[in-house]
Image (tube, rainbow, N blue to C red; front, side):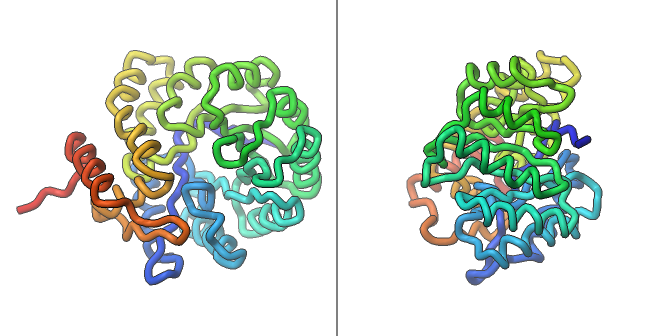
Length: 299
């Protein structure tokens, strides 16, 4: 299946207002991303708070993203679940509404074996006509897909890429040695590791930070893709403290939603069990944003 996942894609936040999904704000966020040069959009992943969305809300966010994007950039819809039947239904819905591809996280909580992981993804891949991006993030799922399992899955024509968020260059390197880069690509799932992964053969990033700075994240990946590693390295160093802040100040997506609210780009509202940052962490984030000249000017 011909879909090459590469460049800078944004793991979109899901805006909430008064406890409901704010589709008007979502549309504005989408236009902001596209107008600032992002290569693709990824709704209802981890950053999109997918675990707290109802099935109807999940479907609606994907549909709104596809509609508002209107073919301007690819939409890689989050359709993962720890139940294979549910993952299949979500992926079928994404295909029906016109998503470009699906992002499927490793089943979480029930800790399947490598054979269980293989059968989970193959079951969905066999039943849909949509490119599938694997998502390896053991910090969220408590299970790591091995490079050997990734390679088995990459042999399926519908499984085209992996979002690598293990934090291990060794795992990423082994995946790259076992797969064909013309048929299967690897992108980073951690903003701070985008450049290191691209240096060994990765093709881009699905980025949290791009919600705030899509043009800067795009500049980093574009430079690396062009082989201009001096420029890419400077972008990496310029963004590094922001990347780390989004990861370490609180659980994703709390820091990025707070930053968007401080920038007047979103409400910053969250759904339980996620709660707003405390005052101390918020002050640390404000200081970080101020250091990067990202707070609105006051008069």
